[in-house]
Amino acid sequence: MTVTYTARVANARFCSFSKLLLAWKGSIYRLLYKEFLAFFALYAAISFTYRFFLDDDQKRYFEKLAIYCNHYSSLIPMSFVLGFYVTLVVNRWWSQYTSIPLPDRLMCVLSGGLQGSDERGRLLRRTMMRYASLSALLILRSVSTAVFKRFPTMDHVVEAGFMSREERKKFEGLHSPYNKYWIPCVWFTNLAAVARCEGRIKDDHTLKLLLEELNAFRGKCSMLFHYDMISVPLVYTQVVTLAVYSFFLVCLIGRQFLDPTQGYPGHDLDLYVPIFTLLQFFFYAGWLKVAEQLINPFGEDDDDFETNWLIDRNFQVSMMAVDEMYGDLPMMERDRYWNDSNPRPPYTAATLFDLRKPSFQGSTFDMPPSLPPPITSSLAFCRCSFHTKRRFNI
Image 1 (cartoon, helix red, strand yellow):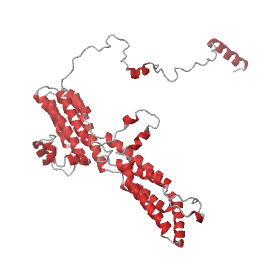
Image 2: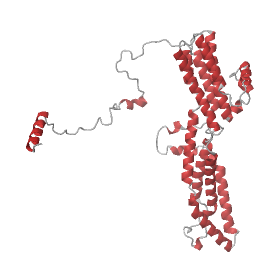
Image 3: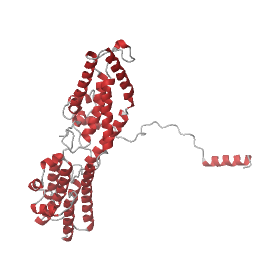
Image 4: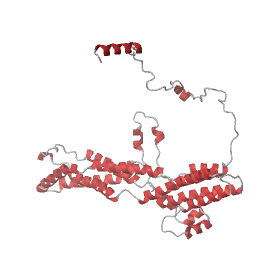
């Protein structure tokens, strides 16, 4: 389930974000603790071996190797490669979310454009809206593991009521080697044409608007399919992963505390625990884990999209909009500010301070005016110009 914490940081207070550091679900600690413990265990094993199992000659050789690894580890461009990669993944993650097909615009146009309160009109609206929901379900079932586990076969889709048995026969009778999520959209357009011929869609402009909204809905389904098919190039993911892992493999040797009696530069202390190296691992490896979490948001991680919830919400809301709410209007009446030329909704005691704030007039409204320069009359200016030209024979 997506972890939501926006209400906990609604106001910026002292140590506001620090309250989130103790959260476990969806946290970096939950993602990284295994790798962190493995890195620390390997570091401790190498340090224990260096201190207690190597003879003097072997220690001197290991110390030279550690200094060499520490010196050349800076050649791995960690910040640049990892930062650019995570930026790319986060932008892709948000674009995938905005590509999820939502029926809200389509259901409003369908409810207002397809007329008829009889059983035939109700059947047309509900069937067309169900076809749109079926198209979204088919594409989400193709890209989301959570949705596929809920609807593993077409029998489950029929059982859930998104498709009838006759529609399933037609769907499976249309042979195509490609994903067939678009077939319900074609059924939708065919029903729209039938409704136009029956006069339930009054004019061609309404039909055009309805089909435009359907095409926008279908376009989002197509974008989800293409996001699933076209991944971030594998070579880029491999480069970033190898950069992070190789850097910290080098750090296992290069960041060891060496014998202070040997007088190596920068090795005056022997603290046993590499605090800053562990922090560096936590930040860089955590950064890589962020990319690993977000590169496919249609899985079952803590911060993946709630696709099954979206299916339930969209289906229920869209059916209500085109059926129960069709032609159902509350009685119109005069609002409470009917005779008020300056309507102002009331404030509660908790928000009364906002009422006393002056209305914004512009950023320069309160600036003190500067003294304007003296204005010379146009006649005096003309005379001055005439005498100047005459004096210098211009």
